[in-house]
Length: 412
Image (cartoon, rainbow, N blue to C red):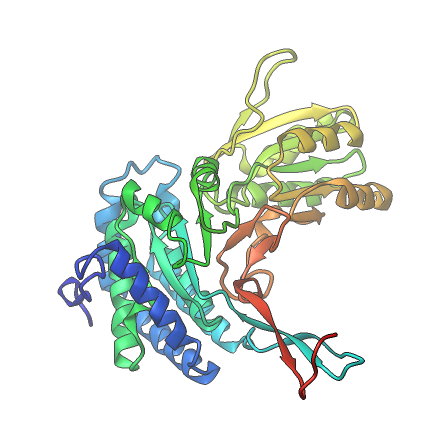
């Protein structure tokens, strides 16, 4: 078993953030030469190490939890348990089982002049991830980045400092034991200054991914000089249509809201067709003792853009599918939306017109997850349209380059 005294000295202590960036960049070049078999073996060893070092990880996590109010919406995201650690190790083994996303020829052709062209998937190089109180993200990001040939720089929040330090220490020890460079993953200090350094690391960081609330994402988008993919913030709706099945609706709404209230795919606002208002008590019955309902009176000001991350739920009665679509257009975040209906035409229209990464018919938004989609773990849920959209996993951690073979051709 490792201990906190075994933590590999941080790159920051060895010469500052600039040296950290340089070392990770250099490690990314070495990682590009490591084959998939060796990368998979490392991840298998790390999954074993997670299981063998649960007590150390849970003790570090306990120190973080002691500094947070248990009523804080982020508390559940911060919490590690034996069961959750087992799930993390299982997800890592699933990542191992997936085919490598590298070296895949996505286009190829031979031109009239004889030039042979191939478009081949390759790693980005160095991926920086900024995230809030979610220490599981440290493992998820590393496993997906490492499998896809990318080095990674982790920038967690102060709330998860002890947890992240213990996690990165365990990763470093496993890398060292396997004869691989520890600098393929680095943990930045949990300060605002470190965030600024990461966002301005032009030439060192190839891609930055913020994973957290809308304030974090807005800050990264507004201040980054390196490329950014937006993820995370979810104002999620479920629309119970006039032709919705009551039993399906009860199960779907309850699961979408209460499975884990702190995650980004949790239900924030329930829209109910006016013809089904009489069914509202039954729809809410499975969670009535846990969830606080917010149904403002007509004309009363209300924040429909709120991502609750708690046992609170906004409720609005709408006159039609049209009004539901307009509400989602005005207040949705492009994350996940669902309709509960037995009307095929309404379902088709909802999926066609709702502008979100994941649009469900008769299924809860709680399924928006890389693991549930069969992708292994996930880096995050992209809510933007340029580049990846929805759960981001191995394939989304690659870019491509063109390979051109000739035989002395010259251009006229």
